[in-house]
Amino acid sequence: MRQEMPFLEHLTDLRRRLIIVLSAFVVSLVTCFLFVDHIYRFLANRATEKLAVLGPGDILAIYLKLAGVGAVAVTIPIAAYQAWRFVVPALTERERTVALMYIPALFLLFLFGLGFAYFVLFPMMYRFVLGLSNGSFDLVITANDYFTFMLNICLPFGFLFELPVAVLFLSHLGILNPHRLARMRKPAYFLLCVVSITITPPDFVSDVLVIVPLIVLYELSVTISRVVHRKRVAEGALNG
Image 1: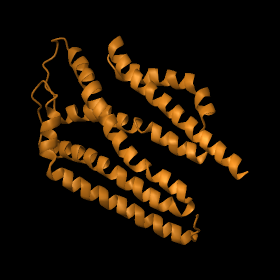
Image 2 (image 1 turned 60 degrees about the vertical axis):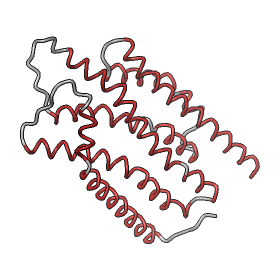
Image 3 (image 1 turned 180 degrees about the horizontal axis):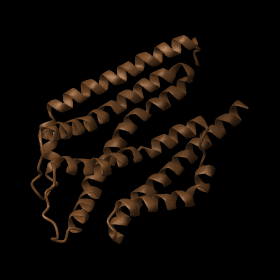
C-alpha cells in the first residue's frame, strides 16, 4: 500500500539518505586506502615493465584512484538500498519486493563488468598500445599513467554492464517497452559497434570479443523488458 509524505518530510528524508551514502563512501574510501598496497600489487601484475613514479604526488594520486574505485564498488549497493528506502512510500508491496532485487544485481553486474574489462579487454589494449612503439621509443611507463589507462577502460564497462538492470527498472516504470527497444535495435547495434571498434585494437578478434558481450547485454535487456511488459499488460487487464 502506498504511503503519502509531506514535501518537507521528503526533503529531510532525501538529505538524510544522501548523508548516509556520502558517509558510506568516505568510510569505504578510508578502508580501501588502508589495504590499497595489496590492491596495487594485484593490479600491477598486468604490467610487463617496471612502473615508475615521478614523485610523492604520483604515489598519493595512484592510491587515491585505486581506493576510490574500491569505494565506489562498495557504495553502489548502499546507494541503491538508500534509493529504494526513499521511494518505498510510493510503491506497492509487490513493487517494493521487485525494486529490492535490483540492489544485489547492480553490485554483481558492476563487478562483472570490471572483471571483463580487466581480464579480457585491458590486456589486449595494453599490448596493442605498447606494440605501437615498435622499438622506436625508450619506454618509461609511470604507474599513474598505467592505472589511469586501466581505469579509463574498466570503469565505463563496470557501469555499462548495469544496462539490463536499468532497462528492467525503466520497464517497470513504463518508460521503456520491448517495442521501443526493438525499433532502436539497428541504431543501438551501430553505436555498440562504433564503441567497440573505437576502444579496441584494429583486429577482428578484439572487436568480436567486445561487440558480442555488448550485443548480448542489449538483447538481454530487450528480453527483460518484454517479460516485464507482458506482466504489466496482464495486470492491467485484470485490474481493468
